[in-house]
Length: 403
Image (cartoon, rainbow, N blue to C red; front, side, top):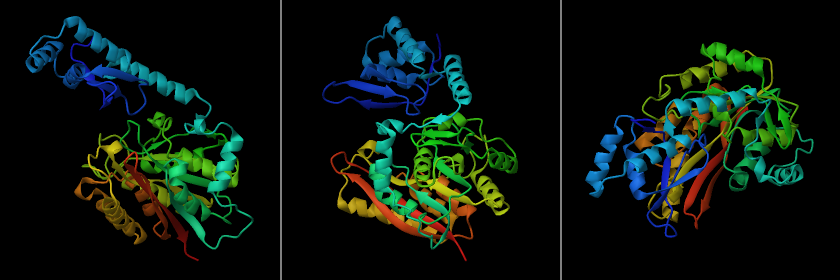
């Protein structure tokens, strides 16, 4: 039993009128599964579990706040419940996390997390055929070297998926695709790669291990230490499925990366000091593809603003606010189309990124790695649900090479 329990980062939210005074607590990373239901008083106890306070200090704080003692058995029981639920930092959680890492590394493939959306392969094919234009043997008018596409679920991101991947119509199947996603749930604060083949309802696509190793050599360090971060991350997977539908799962290789947010206080440097700087990583990608004879396509699986009650906003979204969000998004996107990736990051970070643009890292890498390509904004989309009061925005951008 821990005498100075330290709560891991969790989310807590009220359960509403059906269960007044009760809260749900969950691990947003998904490492710890399940949801705990606790009272407001228990939630206060959780707030004291910072790894510094002893249980006696927590009990004293409780008595001061509520004017009555907390039973020792209650306090010990809560700590035990949190520990068994893997919500406390400590040796037990470390061992649990290691077992998950070992399980991921031992698996033959990285299984699709979005596969549950499709009852069967035929349904997935039918939806993809509706969302993505048919190739029909057309010849591409542009030498497409890179894309920005959404990582929203397909129904909400439909217009931008269609525009982004539609620009590949007539393009030869690339030898390799470097896919840069957003690390929504993982623990790493630097770039994370994985060598696991991606398995989806459309088949298995292998990783170009030799190219991944080359990037690691150029960065001066391995990039797969935290590859378990890829297990639940959807932003790469959604691009893989689109590519598999268009080109066939076995006809190209991928190199999947998850990128950190460069808009925080440490900028391009990892927040915890571990790992490659994002600008150094982008330079390594740029130099490697310049020196390679392989046909390489770069894709950022990227969304933009996240606003509404789901993301912590207390006001009601109206047309004027959506116009403000659109203006801010376009202000940032204009920096990309002007070939100013650093300015793009600075624009997103301005005033602490108030609309929560989530994918500046992967968009920056693609722009920085393709300095000679011409970026073009093909489409901008706001996926707004008035009933749920939530809006996520996204874009489709094409990078074409001159000549």
